[in-house]
Length: 172
Image (cartoon, rainbow, N blue to C red; front, side, top):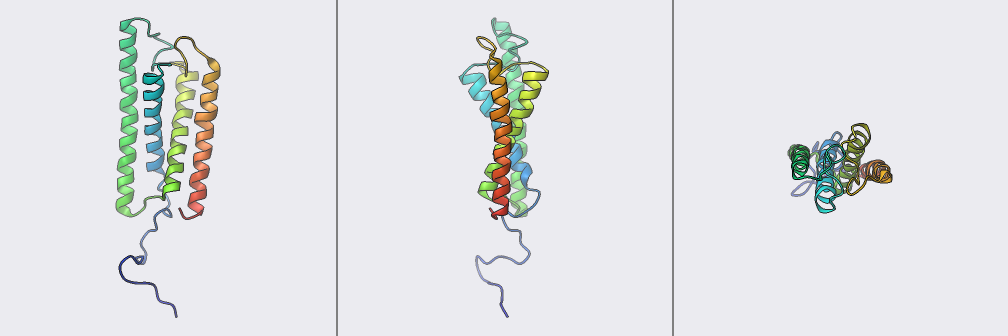
C-alpha cells in the first residue's frame, strides 16, 4: 500500500493544484483587455500620435478639437483602468481560493484578452462607429485598420487561446 507524502511542502489532500483549476480565465482575459487598452492608448494615441479617440469625427486641428479628443482619450483610459483593476481583483480572489493559473496559461489568457480588446475595439470604433482609425493623422490609411484586426485582434486571440489551452493540458 502506498501512502501520500506528508510534511512541509507536501500537497494537502483535496487542495487545488495551481494551473489546474477550471474557471480561472477571467482574471487573465480582463488583465489582457485592460493592459492591451493601455498599450493602445499610450503607444498609438500618445507616443505615435496616429489617432485620438474621436479623431475621425473631430479632427485634432484646433485646440478645442484637441481638448475634446484628450477628454475622450481620458474616458477611454479610465475604462481600461477599470478593466485592469477588475482583473487584478479577480486574480487576487483566485489566489485566495488557490485557483491561480500557471504562468504560461495566464500569459496565454492575457494575450487572448489583448486580442479580444483589439478585435472588439477595432470593429466597433474603426468600422461601425468610425470614431477613429489606426492611422488618422495626417491621413487615414484603411489597410492599417484591417491589419490591426487580423494581427492584433484575430492572431493575438487565437495564439493566446492556443497557448492557454496547451498550458492547461500540460498542467501549467
